[in-house]
Length: 168
Image (cartoon, rainbow, N blue to C red; front, side, top):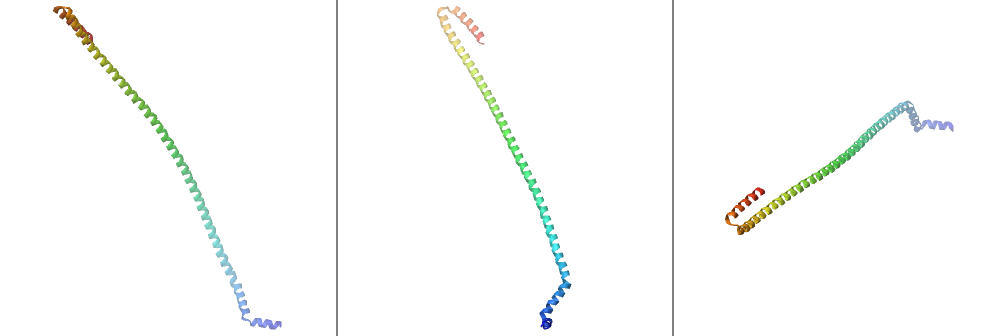
């Protein structure tokens, strides 16, 4: 039975297909294996290169991020300095404006006081002139009533000259 089984196995086409497949694999297997390993190695090399490139890009991105963060901090610091300077300038200008306003008000007050003093002096001078005129008129009437014409004329002329010289 065993011999019969062997003969029937040799007559079976499936057996010979399997034997041919094994022979094919025996001769072609190492070449196929070598090509497959080489293809996988190249794929691994490409993946490693892609990973290296990705790491390089990540490092560059980190460097750029750090640089932009530093620039942002610098810009914020500079903006704060500009604001501080502007506030200082505004405060200084406000103080100067207040000082200038006080000086202008002091000048106007001084001018107003001078005008008031001049007006007072003019009013006093006017009152004095009126008083002199009234006193002169009263003296004329008084002297005219008590003196004779020649003596009265001489006294009036002397008094007018004296008043004139004292006032001017």
